Length: 201
Ligand code: GRF
Image (cartoon, rainbow, N blue to C red):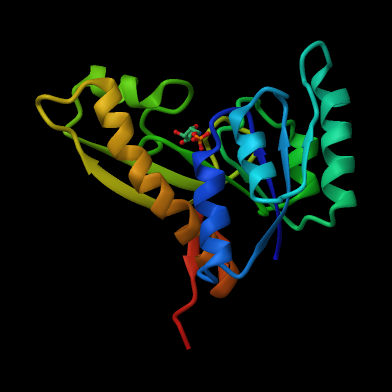
């Protein structure tokens, strides 16, 4: 599969995906990395790996206008799957419809708990004893699409939001390649809001 990654920041999940593809664990190639922030460290990481990159600044642009540029870049690169990896903008229903059930996102909490920003801190403040991460298909809502993979992390008494986030991030780097691999190698469909995988032949 030809994968496009959208990011806005650090890019550690992009790296985890890129390495899993390189090792042959995920039958895909990241053919383009797009950032809406030109200064995102993730863009530089992609360049170091020789992955084609493009910055498409969102600042000052209407969502529709910005997404027009995004879609043009993704289509030009013949992307068939889009992975959001710390991409800090909501996608419009029109964008989502351009890649139906072919957009993935990773969220640093066990959805449907703690959607939105700063999820690790939200979970820590709430006092949950387990949290984790969720890879899900993207629909037009915020952190709301069908779940593909979740991985659990215990919350320790001596955790801070930062130490918890760091242990969740380790699991994110396992979960994201795992989810993409499943979707690309197994037969699956959606029933209601459940992603159902066919039994392995
Ligand atoms: C991750 O915690 C991810 O779950 C969230 O944004 C963060 C991105 O980190 N959506 P990175 O840029 O992949 O390092």
